[in-house]
Length: 150
Image (cartoon, rainbow, N blue to C red; front, side, top):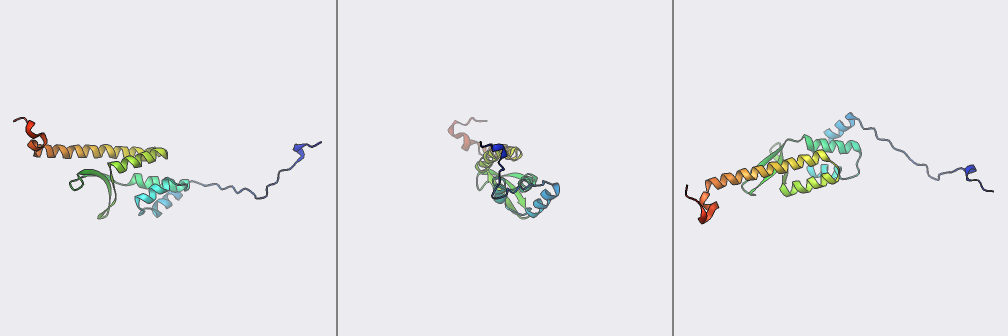
């Protein structure tokens, strides 16, 4: 009678097991190597199947940037940006930040999602402040014929 306990399982191709050691030095090395990379590259790394060291380095690079908010008369909209020397490293408007925030929520990157959500709030404040300044400068234009005499 056949007894499966007596059988030996043999694999034709051995299974390769790879262990990744996540070290602070490895993350720092990757951080320094990617320091000048564009924003799109870093977000692509976050959304791909790169190693944990690379993902952590990309996350830190985005979080460590000095994000600022500015209202543009040209665009008539506020945007978030990172100053890199004399040029802007990245310019993100409210719609861009919303899509980035949703993408980070999907990737379970809560720190980045909260960064982008906070920037959206700052953009709303900057736009409201600019509109308020403009309304004070031109009260009759904004109120039309229904403006109250002050």
